Image (cartoon, rainbow, N blue to C red; front, side):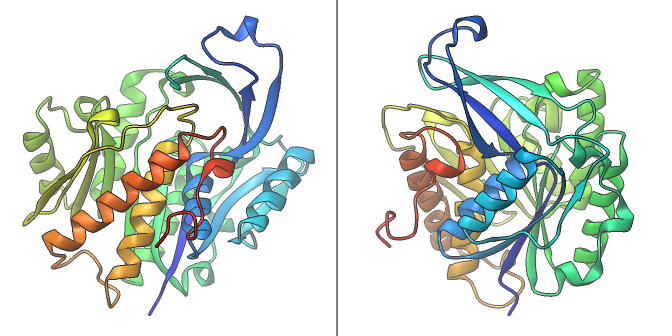
Length: 319
């Protein structure tokens, strides 16, 4: 049984400010933390005891080597990561609001991950993989988009699951229309789609979740994760709908929280299901178990700073 989670896309350095509730120009110092949504998902999965691998390209620079070192430290397989001297590793400076919410300023024009081409994606990367996860940051009009399509094609041939978190970052795109168009291009290629309440109308064209979910199902999506921040989360298949309330905590930093949710959900889904088709026929009870576990994971994560560094281990989850 395949049990490795692969993710393709950006791995970067998040620069976390020394204090929250202020603007960028009021920050006294930033601390570098390894991040990037696909890398975060891998890290969450591995910190829970799963096996994961990251597929990307980094700059052959100190930040690129830092990312590789820290991913290795949490048992993410980095053998599918390339290094280049053609561009630097991507950076993201983060500003934190008083409630733990954040805004980003990105340095990637271009960054090394954007230049990763389809010729670098090898079929053997996916021999032991049950699911491939990706986000929208690296599906713009540059080589990495075609690398995504090749990876998805290989996974399709192997019967694996495709997981997509649009994770909309508007300031990385020339226009909202370009971002929405790219996201909607990849929706029909996906089995699992995770969206937030703020993203629903952009991704589906609908304001109502029930209607939006049906739109996604009509395009071949099999499982929808719908997160509502402090108001909890829903999971939908064509046969089952479940809801899990959020756990009330004092959020210190929400950076990477959605990625941690996804990684934890995928880990639990793989852990409690048998065979390679882990979505077909999933029961209401098991789907709720996955959703509740992901919420609990997030509740612990947001009480700490950073993304990967904030993710709890399997022992900390008391499972």
